[in-house]
Length: 115
Image 1 (cartoon, one colour):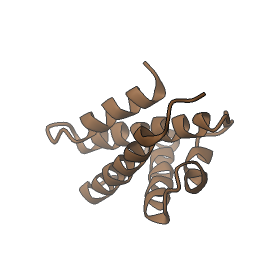
Image 2: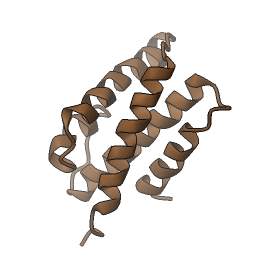
Image 3: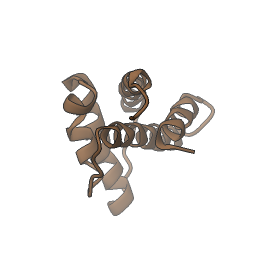
Protein backbone atom coordinates (compact mmCIF):
# COMPACT_ATOMS: atom_id res chain seq x y z
CA UNK A 1 0.00 0.00 0.00
CA UNK A 2 1.31 3.42 -0.90
CA UNK A 3 1.40 6.62 1.11
CA UNK A 4 -1.70 8.03 -0.56
CA UNK A 5 -3.79 4.91 0.03
CA UNK A 6 -2.59 4.61 3.62
CA UNK A 7 -3.41 8.24 4.28
CA UNK A 8 -6.89 7.98 2.78
CA UNK A 9 -7.73 4.87 4.84
CA UNK A 10 -6.48 6.46 8.07
CA UNK A 11 -8.43 9.63 7.34
CA UNK A 12 -11.61 7.60 6.90
CA UNK A 13 -11.02 5.76 10.19
CA UNK A 14 -10.29 9.03 12.03
CA UNK A 15 -13.95 9.97 11.59
CA UNK A 16 -15.18 6.91 13.51
CA UNK A 17 -16.71 8.45 16.62
CA UNK A 18 -16.71 5.16 18.54
CA UNK A 19 -12.90 5.38 18.73
CA UNK A 20 -11.22 7.29 21.53
CA UNK A 21 -10.32 10.91 20.86
CA UNK A 22 -6.63 10.00 21.14
CA UNK A 23 -6.96 7.25 18.52
CA UNK A 24 -8.83 9.57 16.18
CA UNK A 25 -6.13 12.21 16.60
CA UNK A 26 -3.40 9.66 15.92
CA UNK A 27 -5.16 8.38 12.80
CA UNK A 28 -5.84 11.89 11.46
CA UNK A 29 -2.29 13.11 12.17
CA UNK A 30 -0.73 10.08 10.49
CA UNK A 31 -3.11 10.45 7.55
CA UNK A 32 -2.04 14.09 7.17
CA UNK A 33 1.61 13.12 7.34
CA UNK A 34 1.27 10.29 4.80
CA UNK A 35 -0.62 12.46 2.33
CA UNK A 36 1.72 15.43 2.76
CA UNK A 37 4.74 13.17 2.35
CA UNK A 38 3.19 11.68 -0.80
CA UNK A 39 2.80 15.21 -2.21
CA UNK A 40 6.42 16.04 -1.47
CA UNK A 41 7.60 12.80 -3.06
CA UNK A 42 5.41 13.50 -6.09
CA UNK A 43 7.59 16.60 -6.57
CA UNK A 44 10.72 14.43 -6.35
CA UNK A 45 11.85 15.18 -2.79
CA UNK A 46 12.60 12.88 0.14
CA UNK A 47 12.63 14.84 3.39
CA UNK A 48 14.88 14.04 6.33
CA UNK A 49 12.45 15.28 8.99
CA UNK A 50 8.72 14.87 9.63
CA UNK A 51 7.80 18.52 10.03
CA UNK A 52 9.03 19.66 6.61
CA UNK A 53 6.15 17.93 4.84
CA UNK A 54 3.73 20.38 6.49
CA UNK A 55 5.94 23.44 6.04
CA UNK A 56 6.09 23.02 2.27
CA UNK A 57 2.37 22.41 1.67
CA UNK A 58 1.93 25.91 0.21
CA UNK A 59 4.42 24.83 -2.49
CA UNK A 60 3.54 21.17 -2.99
CA UNK A 61 -0.26 21.47 -2.95
CA UNK A 62 -0.90 25.22 -2.83
CA UNK A 63 -2.49 24.71 0.59
CA UNK A 64 -3.26 27.85 2.54
CA UNK A 65 -2.48 28.76 6.13
CA UNK A 66 -5.83 27.37 7.28
CA UNK A 67 -4.38 23.94 6.46
CA UNK A 68 -0.72 24.05 7.36
CA UNK A 69 -1.25 25.95 10.63
CA UNK A 70 -3.58 23.23 11.91
CA UNK A 71 -1.13 20.55 10.79
CA UNK A 72 1.81 22.35 12.40
CA UNK A 73 -0.10 22.67 15.69
CA UNK A 74 -1.06 19.00 15.48
CA UNK A 75 2.58 18.11 14.92
CA UNK A 76 3.52 19.95 18.11
CA UNK A 77 0.75 18.19 20.05
CA UNK A 78 1.84 14.85 18.62
CA UNK A 79 5.44 15.46 19.68
CA UNK A 80 4.41 16.28 23.25
CA UNK A 81 2.48 13.03 23.36
CA UNK A 82 5.18 10.98 21.69
CA UNK A 83 8.22 12.31 23.55
CA UNK A 84 6.84 13.67 26.82
CA UNK A 85 3.85 11.40 27.36
CA UNK A 86 1.46 14.35 27.43
CA UNK A 87 -1.19 14.07 24.70
CA UNK A 88 -3.62 16.96 25.17
CA UNK A 89 -6.27 16.68 22.46
CA UNK A 90 -9.89 17.75 22.35
CA UNK A 91 -12.74 17.34 19.92
CA UNK A 92 -12.14 20.75 18.32
CA UNK A 93 -8.50 19.98 17.48
CA UNK A 94 -9.41 16.57 16.07
CA UNK A 95 -12.19 18.04 13.91
CA UNK A 96 -9.92 20.83 12.64
CA UNK A 97 -7.23 18.24 11.90
CA UNK A 98 -9.67 16.03 9.99
CA UNK A 99 -10.91 19.02 7.96
CA UNK A 100 -7.37 20.14 7.12
CA UNK A 101 -6.40 16.57 6.19
CA UNK A 102 -9.44 16.26 3.92
CA UNK A 103 -8.29 19.37 2.08
CA UNK A 104 -4.85 17.79 1.62
CA UNK A 105 -6.49 14.54 0.49
CA UNK A 106 -8.67 16.35 -2.07
CA UNK A 107 -5.63 18.13 -3.48
CA UNK A 108 -3.45 15.02 -3.70
CA UNK A 109 -6.18 13.05 -5.44
CA UNK A 110 -6.14 15.74 -8.15
CA UNK A 111 -2.41 15.29 -8.86
CA UNK A 112 -1.73 13.49 -12.14
CA UNK A 113 0.16 10.20 -11.94
CA UNK A 114 3.92 10.75 -11.62
CA UNK A 115 5.77 10.57 -14.90
